Image (cartoon, rainbow, N blue to C red; front, side, top):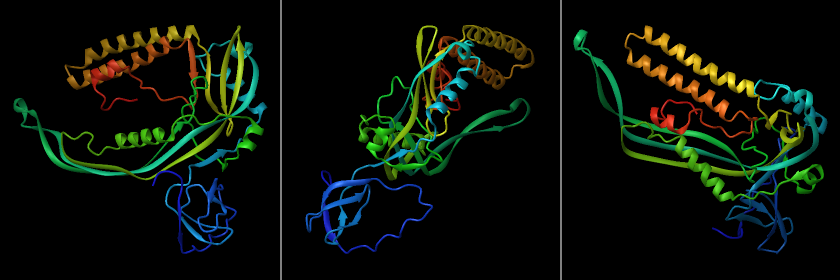
Length: 363
């Protein structure tokens, strides 16, 4: 049922067991819901279905979802730790300008809590169809490859999770986070505002949820790879959406008259996103070296390939990967973007991926 949560009388449930010392986090609370029996105000765990009125002890059943669960990750890194992590990153790697470690001036540093949607679901389904296979028949000069089809049944049952930014972060650049092992606490807006800047969620929860579920189904489609598809059923079950406010230290620094940015994970001090000027010498060496390696490897391979079609195809894909990586390093290396929060980009440009096909190529 859509609209405001409704409640009906049911037999009171047994009281829940007391929390133990191993409880990881407390649930968020939903307020503003009235008891239909006495009119008293209810405070309910978000996502709960069965509750008890604290005034008249009436058992109540929620017939619609009571809000979205909201949590925050407790920050474990202070401002000096964030600045030190930024300095370490500036002095590491060949792709960045090698003068950064000496000349970069760290300036404004503040803690920000960015909201992320954590979407989870189990994908279940199966498909019936035919799969194309190959076999070698004959011998000697009559040896040939034969293609045939076999009937197959494929099924899938997999748990999927995805983290999506709940706010537009074009400048900050963090598109994903890793919540594994993080300590979650109930969302308290006032406490977070005292610690740092809190960004409000501006993206639609419904759109984020639907997009994640569509991606889950597409990535786990049991009909993928079938030559002929006769039947397919695919659904997501046990769906959930949680809003998590993640702590990130925003560190601004200046280098040769220009302002740059780094975001340090407030939970374990690793780099979530950083932007820095590139190393022009490194860019040129990578491009020229990759082209020279491909030319040398191609001439050497052709001398020993002995007309192998499969070998030539393998080398062509490998050469395309090397050249694509080198060209991307040269083309976009003027500004270096690094960090665990970057959105994954395909290694090959779209035109090359279409030429060789998507199957079996890395992303």
